[in-house]
Length: 378
Image 1 (cartoon, rainbow, N blue to C red):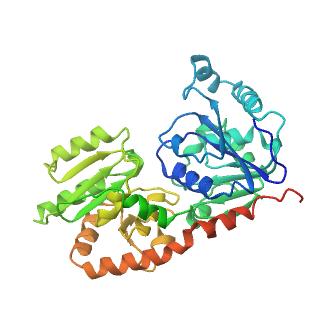
Image 2: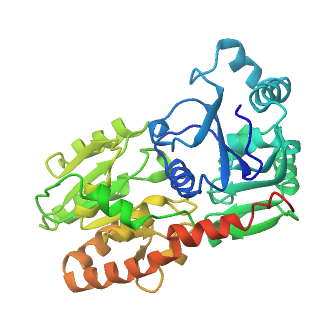
């Protein structure tokens, strides 16, 4: 690794991959706004893979635990053995060498936190981010030997950062670590620029879903809501932007409901923002979230958000900055219909949402994060 410039602070970030999820986009935004004149930044990925790899800023040194982007057969076997911790610590130390960091940051629960646990001795301050609701979706436990090991990690780090107050309130471990709520950065000027890169046309009033097509996201609720509105004689269209293991199942549902002319599967879009801005409504249909980046992005672009009451949504969409509804297709259909029939309400919500985006502007968030990183002389 490069020799550090001791007039700067050395920060190590740990992440699993750079796939197309919200946490990865949040990390990119953070890395892009950390001043390279103040920080030497190193990013260690678990697997060297993901659509966002080319977008990592050039001043960030990127290394990977598994540079091939996948594990060899014996490494897959080690993952399920007591040797895993010893093996992966050695690989991490091979990358880090004799360096010690001012701060080590695991930017997500799960794999990044499990990596971080192995090198807590390599940083003056250890900070870990949590992007999910542990009550509703404690998916990260599979990357630790047991709950006790995961709890001990969070009890050992100096700071735990949650992306919403709801996610903080639903953290299931009782720890003495300092806790903070720091929202993900939303760079409105950048989003507007990206949204202007392509002209997107729509056939009529359009609701869109953006995200991984997995069970937990429940994109079928939007499909069923649009079908119900069509049955009422209401002309409406839907865009499904994203890919995932449930894609075929969702396409089958569209065929069963005879909605193939009304609902379009767009696939993964590296730049989804022209579509988000053009859509009339973005629907967040998940049962569980931390605080989805796509919701903040839609608000910044003036697209009204209709969401289930999952973690983070109440605090961000309250005061008529969006619409909260029950997690049923009927509820989504009712709220979409209400918005269709009231353009003035849509405009009012969009205006309030844009005003709320000052909570997420880069300068505000970077200042909060910089307060966690120790000075070189402290």
